[in-house]
Image (cartoon, rainbow, N blue to C red; front, side, top):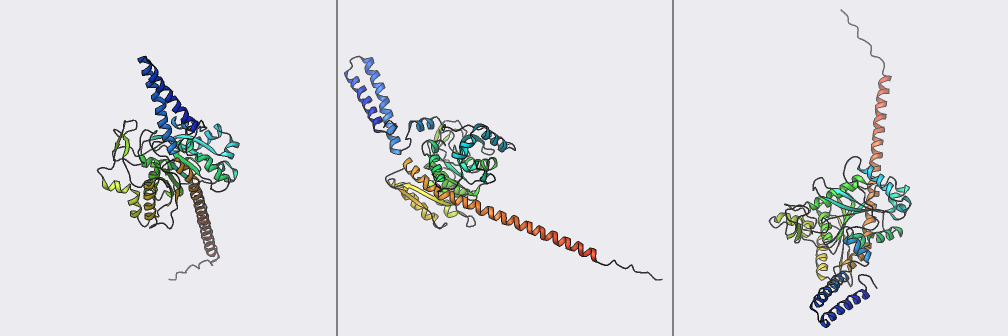
Length: 426
């Protein structure tokens, strides 16, 4: 009732606005009339923001709202190992062991945040990472986990996955009920603190966002944690702008991601909001970063790219979801699905009834997407482990055969009669 979407909260705002307007009309003194007018603006403004929040079904609790606006997720310790140096993985393991409860980690998993520094993009941003409970089980002590990179929309932050999308309780429930396979969730900041809308693009004259999100973050995770290297055992997913990011990155880095989830995404770059001067911290301004480079624009258009991906490269598997009430989202998703079907045998498309372009769609589709993606990622891990074991056994067998052949040759040489020296006659 008192939540940010509750009816009682909206009634309180209406009553507050009505009371202040009444005061404005009744009072005779100018100073009080001015004060009433100023104060009346506050509930009116809050009502508008709350109406937008209710329309998009974004924040459902005050805790989620305050946590997301502050850019923090509840109960997420900050771990500082951020480089790609030799001691990073050991340092991070020590920090995890020293700052968390092992028994709770093995029951609920661990959410933490860290700072990743991109060696080529030169971007420094926060990344939230969730390690599933299995990561701390003895039976998984030598297991390298698959990973899913989750990309938020704009405006937004990586904490939106936790505070608004409820990804952790959804995933934990799927794990407990064995509807999903364990995987590490990676949630990077794709927009530099929520002040831009970069669309995960490599700006020819500015921030190299795609390099950071598509290459450097996965590389850091695979190097630092017990996680598979980027490839068929990695997935990428996002909603709204993050959905475009997921589609574009999955196709451009098709050898680094095997699966992609696009929730209310789009499939051609729009107007980005980037910092003036092309450096973090600059004042945001709207621009088409590929305005003078048509070839780069096409290269970053998933609708075009899916048809022009070289035949020797497998197109990643896609899961699509949209709200039935947003006909534009439905139309572009159906068209993209038709294009994909020219390269892959099946593309699930989930149309959520009674919803448009909002968090209700994304939360509803999140569970089915993880049920679809994570078992396939786990299968890839098992498959490649078996292939590696078979290859290792074959190499051992070949080495043993070569050793036996060499031993037989030495034994045969030892059994030969000594050569009789020739006598020279004169």
